[in-house]
Image (cartoon, rainbow, N blue to C red; front, side, top):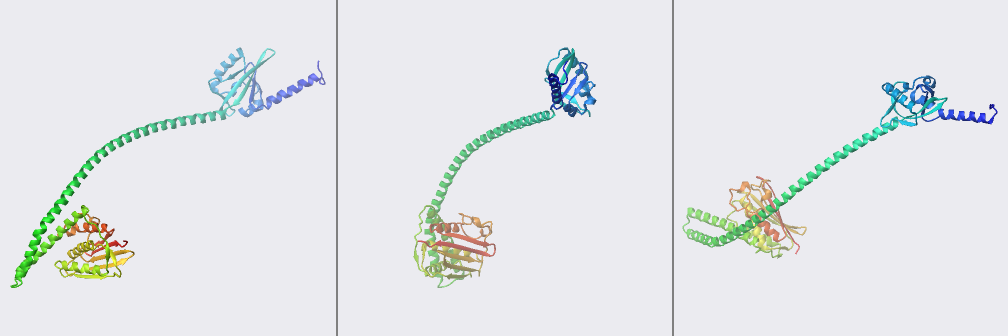
Length: 423
């Protein structure tokens, strides 16, 4: 019989203390039951898990630690285990829950083992609270579901985008086919229009040449009639002679415009720039005013020259340009109106301003004034072809010049011509 001083007895006591420390300080819940299912031991971690103290738990059926709905089934499972005890992990393929003292449940993982003392069976249950793991699993499941949802949505969107791209590609192909057809039609129409334009130009040139001879004859006859009438002046005859001369002059101007346009379009007109004295501009203007004397009806025409040194110009083109601009100013200015003509040199440019206080031009019409055959709406009752400013623009292009216009209805118009002076 060992005594307290026996080394074997001391070793047993140490082992007992070690097992008690292992039991009480284990980091999982440990519940020990007898063969009737009553709790005989309850470690400290189990107290934390279930909320019961050891004193409250010992002697009670282990069913107190299970949800009420599990009591009957647990009794069956327990009896089967007692019949064939072996180490096992409970809850294969299903979730296990334990019940806290306050009635709340929490998910657990349980491992069972057993031992026998004096032919009496005891069961040890190792209980792990897996609440955190379950929450993480739930979050993972939710994230996977969300990922599947997003993936499905992306697949659907990709399919829709692919279909849209296919539809748009088809539309683009059809549009390209239509564009090619339209291009061919436009090309054909352009060639037809070009051919028609050339026919018109040739006809206008031919007609202009053919009309000039009879017009010259009419004008000569009117001049002779005027001389015959000077002996015994008859006001009525003189009136009709002036009407004939005015009509012939107007017709001559129209023909000149058609001839000029035809030559421009055929490339027969070239600028021949040469040096001109400062007095040249004044001479050209005076000659023009003498030629246009029949058109002037009481208007006051003022010419101002600020030229101090020679300038470069094509005199013939300048005369044609000023003839058109000044005759327009006379036509569209009322009787006793004022027309100011100014010429100057500034910043390497020869600049001419022609200002009148005539009927003016609307803002809507101004962008179209340099188009062929265009006439402002407030000038439709005044004789003209709508070619004058178009021809002026073409003449200025030959000299690398430009034309600009400022106008207001019933207040007048200012036309500015700019011709560069670099040789």
